[in-house]
Image (cartoon, rainbow, N blue to C red; front, side):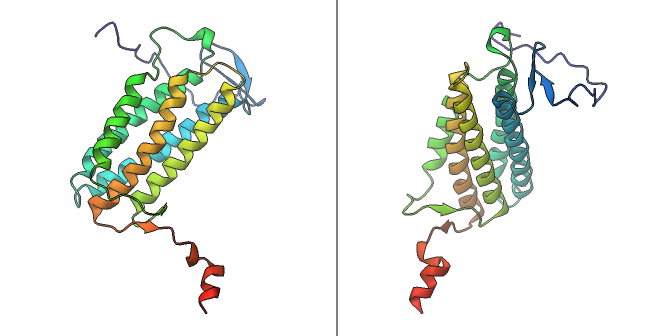
Length: 212
């Protein structure tokens, strides 16, 4: 193992409940305890939520790879993203002064890789003439859910950064990941041969009334 790698997890989870959180507090890496409604807890909790939705989208991509083989590649990318999100959560669950030099984290390399994947997949997509609505396929809708949760995680991290030190690479990564999820949703629809749902303002109830 190279000197540039992160430490492997050192965990032994034998009991799921400890009762220590019954008072509304939870422990960070290193021991400090915070209220469960603290912005830092909200930040890595939302990243955990995003990770769960990414896992759901990945399973859909795997199931659909029999119909569109290229979706197997997307499933592999989503798996990597899950690990990266856990690394981001690890940092957010640790006060800056308690971070270990070898603790898993997000670096510029993760955002750069997302940019490569965005550019490569976007080459195969038609330019947008309007906004798109989630749907057309379950995978498309799931990726849009991931995108919106990712944006929420980003907003929370930005709010936290206004009060405390937050690794700028995490905010940058979340911003780039939400862009990637948008492109992946469109790319997945193209692989499946599914038309995109384009926003039509006059498809609203008031717009249709004017046509009568």
